Length: 227
Image 1 (cartoon, rainbow, N blue to C red):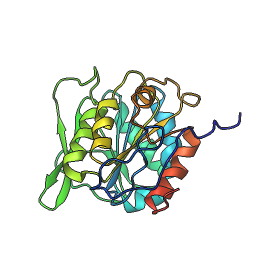
Image 2 (image 1 turned 60 degrees about the vertical axis):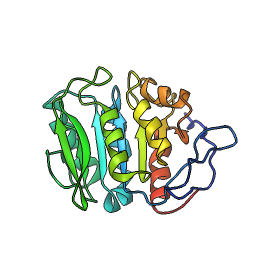
Image 3 (image 1 turned 30 degrees about the vertical axis):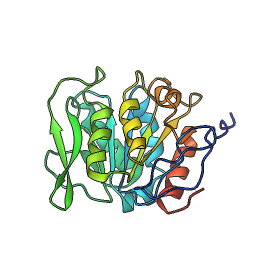
Image 4 (image 1 turned 90 degrees about the vertical axis):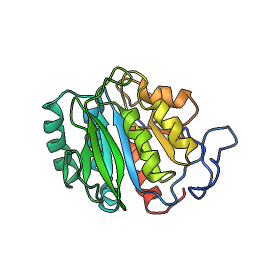
């Protein structure tokens, strides 16, 4: 089956501190200037989608940290991290509370614990907590997305992949308001178009793309290409 056409309409990126830019259709424009990291949220169908994505974003991982929240219980995230390491050929592991976030690595939220990022002096560190479920999920995507705004302001590129529910939509809305960007997986390639569909229908996505087009887009954006 031929990939679905790209549905986003984009304009040139603006500096992170500038007001949020929008396309002529009202959708936020892609922002990438001053990017500090990539955040990914997923649920139903997510492990397979994540494997496909991380296998193709090596140039992004090499220069920036990649943080992932996948709705998944304990033990299963340990196994998923091992699969992500093999697929990406880069270090990937369940995040550890207090560890410093570094480029070149993939950090996966451990099952049953929310993952956030916090300031640690001049660096960024992982903060895990055992708080109540958010959006009926634990770990949840919104805590990660919202915490990154305090640390990286507008330097956030977020991706919402296949999954049930609407987790990631509210955090994505705040990321866009802060000057960052949201890319969502399209309906045709999603196992469940709940999470990405909620983001797309909220009008916060700069791009809604088939899974096989997300990685090339991220590589171009993080390399400084505005197309």
